[in-house]
Length: 198
Image (cartoon, rainbow, N blue to C red):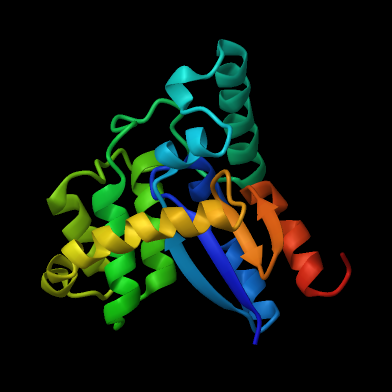
């Protein structure tokens, strides 16, 4: 069975715009998805990029236009100036990591819920209560998630090193073996690749 390694962060608007298309693609091709939350602000400078605050104004302007265009194209609500951005993504990333380990809930839904909370619902995913509410809403036991947070922090760090070693430089990023796809706008290419057409 084919495995898609999905590198992402819960705070990214482009992760949000990916919606559930990855899961639909995986279902079509009987592929599994390994959810790999990473620390994108640390990833960027280590792989030749820049964090958003340090980018040239022309790049920031283009990013906003892309977000507006894609949100309309996909018919997804998106607040270009969300109330809680930037926010620390670590607690929600830890929650996804722990949820994958303990099981019992909707992991795909959880991974999609955190960026949606930021970009469409005006919620603060750095707040423990918000994290617990979202976790519970997708069928996971908040107490079990909390117990795994310390170990999840170690996994979060190792996920970053794996990402860098395997050539990941942005989010969302999809890997099938050594084949790389960067960005939610490359999901169609991933679909075609899995169909043997690329």
